[in-house]
Every structure is written in structure tokens, then in C-alpha cells.
Length: 149
Picture 1 (cartoon, one colour):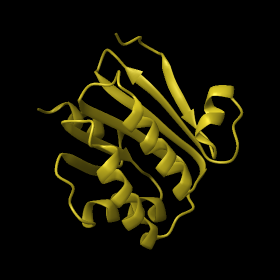
Picture 2 (cartoon, rainbow, N blue to C red):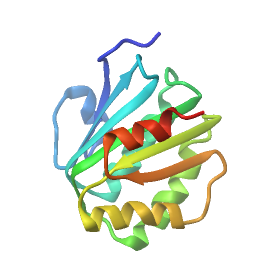
Picture 3 (spheres, one colour):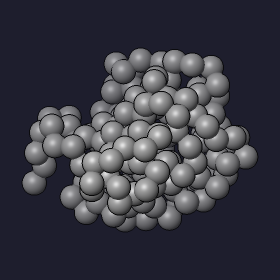
């Protein structure tokens, strides 16, 4: 059962520190929107490769999320602290992290050039079966794409 407004977790440097509510540097907040049946994610501050990998592990281990998962990520307040070459490592991990799902569809909202370019590199990296990713400049456009069947 999904609870509107329930925060499933926040990713910090140490995955388990989220259970103790002790934020470290990068912050990723996660909340399931039961009305829209999507996972809403917010990136804020410096986001490092480690943060992204821990976020993926949290998604992988969450057995309550829909198996056809739709994710709306607001990264407008994020400062990515990873390089284009680290995206390949991220995608390799992602391939394993989405295995519990039938499909994962991710819409990322961006408004800064560097972060937008890094997000778009995900689209240009090796394709993963069952994973769809797209970058948008507005919440409305991102939601329209996500909610299309």
C-alpha cells in the first residue's frame, strides 16, 4: 500500500545514515506520489557519483514501488560533482539496479547547462533494456511524457 506524502528515504554519503536522519553532503529526497503513481525525486546541492549509486541501490531494494516504475526527478537545484566518464560507471550500476523492475521510465528536470549536458549523456550511453530516460526543462513537459502510456 502506498501512502501519499510518505517519504521513502533520503540518500546521503552513507546509505544507512538515512535511517538515522543524519544528512552529510549531497542530498536526494524521495517521495512516492500515489495520486500520479510516480516516484518524485529531488536532487539538491552537490551530488556525487557515490550519491547516485546509493540512490540506485535504495530503488533496487524497495519492494513496495510499482514494477513499472515512473520517476520524476527535479535536478534544478543540483550541482553534479561527477564527470562524463563516471556516467559509464553509473550506467553499469543502473543496469543491475533496475533488474527487479519490469520497466523504469525517468524524466529529469534540468535548468543548468552543465547538469543538463551530463543528464543528456545518459541518453547517449549504452542503452539498457527496460530503461527509458529523458531530460526536460519543465515539470509539465516531464509529467506529460511520464504519464503517456
